[in-house]
Amino acid sequence: MSTQLKNLSDFSHTTVPSGTNYKFGIIVAEWNAEITGALYNGALKTLLANGVAEENIISLPVPGSFELTGGAEILLSKRSDIDAVICLGCVIQGDTKHFDFICDAVAQGVTNVGIKYSKPVIFGVLTTNNLEQAQDRAGGKHGNKGDEAAITAIKMADFSAQI
Image (cartoon, rainbow, N blue to C red; front, side):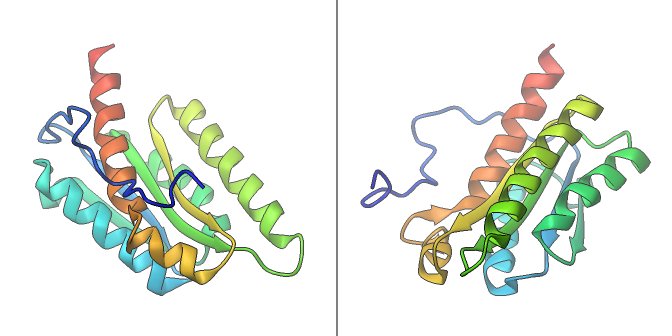
């Protein structure tokens, strides 16, 4: 596994622009709250550390990962001043195909919302085999996917502003 010995939240190899001039939405799933809470805290901390003012961050909960797409859609339909939306969730493999349907629907939905609004909508959803893998990626030994999603949002908002 390529992540076995790697902290995925190391950004020393890239330049991160300032987030000072941007507004962000964070849509976070309440399901698997221990994990999504850690993802949210990572994303929020990273946005603030990169110059985003607290008043330029709108955080909204949705029941589960499946609802992330609807949450991003509603936010962007009501707030044209948002530069990027971060979708945070966690889907852990179970014994049924539910995992596959949810993961596919959320990935496609996040992509489609971004295309519809021509705004970055970031997929910060863990799709893991078990709780331990989720914990490892929500502030554990492999970093925090919330941090990664926030950096991606800043970089994509800046990319969009340059076009």
